[in-house]
Image (cartoon, rainbow, N blue to C red; front, side, top):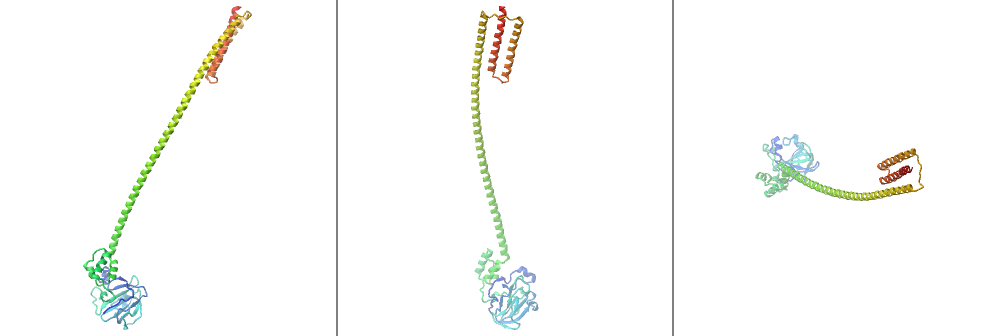
Length: 369
């Protein structure tokens, strides 16, 4: 007997014996058939010649139960095949069917998480205590499928689980096609654990890479900060040198200005000294001239002044007072800076000389009388 798959396109979503932990709750050692991917309305065909032993809701047959939803059981020459979770059937109980004949359409009736076809094989006299509710692995009965070789199973383990296949795995998968082996390994808990470890390793590597990048960024920031500090230090040094150069320029200008001021002061002092010297010479000369003129007047025969004693007294007092006032006034003017000291001295000396000469005239006049 050689069975065919009940669908035209085969993709096994759950293999025979899979998900042991889940099915142990129901007293089974694992999944008791093959789950094939099929959208609602996908045609379902008889796996071999036979007769319809049952069609309808699984709750009405002890082999299928509520979980099967709408289902079909076909009796063949050497076994039974079951088709569960159908949308609807197109055959009747007791009807004969040929291999590949349409028996219904797949659906999502019964207990399912998504639309698919559950396909199973039961011996003519099922042993319902075999750990799979009397079902058996369909793979050995399928004529259109080549079972996986040991080398193919080993390579699948290397490719998917990244380890060598163990003896138990080789024995389990030796009755399945290689596509199913690879699909089942890819959906296994071990594969999920492997992927989780690789993801964690990738996460740790990413964290390490991120830390390395952050460290490089920190080092780059420190280098940039150091360079910035050097640049600022250079700017500060340039500013210091510029300030020192400016101070030196200002000091040179101040020195030059001071030297020029000292030179002007010296020249002014020399001018003033010369003026004083000239003024003193002028005063002396003026005094000599006054004395000479006074003497000439006194020596002249026609000079015979007649002055009373009272007038003489007033003249003496007036000339002395005038000399004193002149000296005080010009001294104050010189001190207050309202008149050059040399000019004030010259004028005061001239006035005083004149007054002395006048007083002398009165004195001589008094002698001749």
